[in-house]
Length: 115
Image (cartoon, rainbow, N blue to C red; front, side, top):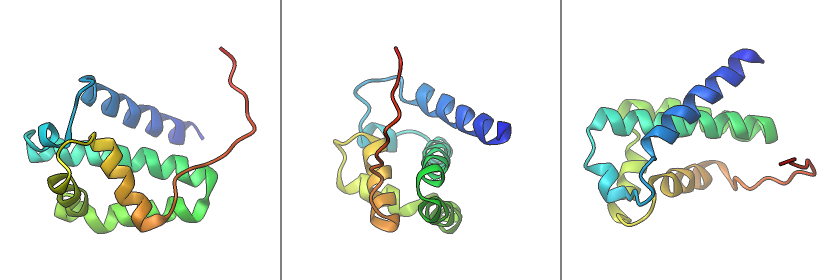
């Protein structure tokens, strides 16, 4: 459990630092070095896979399998989508690609959050 939490916290911290700029677009994202792009997408994929596995185990495996199948290409399906839609936020397109491959990422919960 701690390993899962630590992985999620690490992934979120990298993604948060990379997205400090509020007006980040895929056009700006694609101007960054390829290794930075791959790391960003990998962090989003790991986080999405972890969240999915807590809600729909099969969907978590699907995202993990997508990651494994696309890592060697630098996550080309995401890069292609970003090239077609340069004005969107990178996270929106990354998650859209996951949804296309693995289904809707909307989850419901009855848990309440205290301030």
